[in-house]
Amino acid sequence: MPSSSTEIYPFIRCRPAVDPSFKVFLETAPELQSLKHRLVIPRGAALFAEGDRPTGIYILISGRMELITCVSTTTRILVPAVEGGQVLGLSAAILATPNEYTAEASERCQVEFIRRDDVLRLMREHREIGLQFARLVSEDCRRIVELRRLLMLHQVETVYASGSRLHRPLTGV
Amino acid sequence: MRDGHRLRVIESCLNCTLRTESFFCDLSAATMPVFDAISTAMPYPTGVVIFMEGQMAHGIYVLCSGRVKLSTSSGDGKTVIIEVAEPGEVLGLSATISAMPYEVTAVAMETCQVNFVRKDDFLRFLSENGEACLRVAQHLSRTYHTAYEQTRALALYTARENLAQVLLKWCGERGRATEQGIRVTLPLSHEELGQTLGTTRETVSRLLTELKREQIIFLRGSALFVRDKGALEKLVGS
Image 1 (cartoon, each protein chain N blue to C red):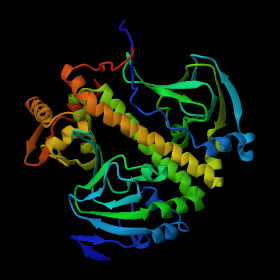
Image 2: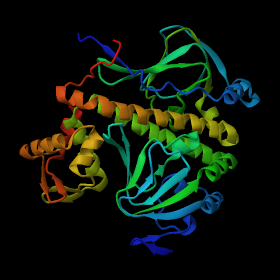
Image 3: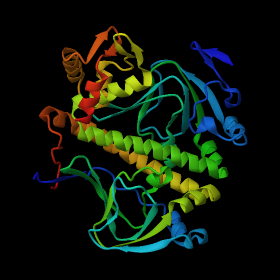
């Protein structure tokens, strides 16, 4: 059985901190309160898995999550942890496409879940929510362009030259 | 309508004949005039830089016609092509919404018509239109999802497999069935193809030669004929 390896990309920017006023809004806005369901995720548990159909979005209240994408049966790409105030699973929920990554709790986390239908309705009815969520997705777009740029500039030629399907680990195991 | 650089520029979205199914072309009858009022139609001749990586975002560009190369560079001048944008795509959207610098450089690959909307006007438009916000988020989510899959493919596949993937994509988008196979006019040079795949021009030439030798493709001038599409699909699926 092949051993698995995890690529850690320390040079990928962590998700930028959520605008503090938006964080307060997420925590206190009356229109959100009745829609949120609080969950406690133990360390090591997956909040959602790559490839699953999204059922909603998750607002991380406390703790740390890691975002993991499998690029082969033995290799995973791990993007830096995200911390309190971040919204996870948003783009997949908006499009109803499978989750692009697995969100795994690297410590005990508290999250709040909002159903997909409620998210879409909120975005239609509350322009500020719509604009803020669009900003969050745009940040994800920027990060993926950066990841791709770094992969292509620093690694792919090495991978191709070796004929290997696996990345040479940069750091970590 | 006026002529510019041999391109017939359509000044207004309201009587546009180039409409695609993309977000901004498909706004509701009530919203379209509002968007039309804040957008400016501009022609860009081949080779002109529309915006540059690192430049603070000053607005969005809706690509109405033509193709635009989106690329990014390292400090030592190495370039990678992130995407070739087709009509209907919105350039600079994530940077404008995030109020950040453009993350790529956009260069017209052929004469283009672009509708420009200033950042302040665009953000005001969004803040006044809930439906538009949702659709921008959907547009960005689609961009994100596609980019994620492309990035994963880049990490997962070899250069040969990624080249096969690109050729299959072109067959679907611009291929024409002929007696000799599917004819595709190459939209990129070997060097640009290398920049798309994260490899060199020499590697691209070598891989194309291998595919020719295996009688999967053949080249005639700037046209590429795919003789054995099944073999390409098998390469990608392997």
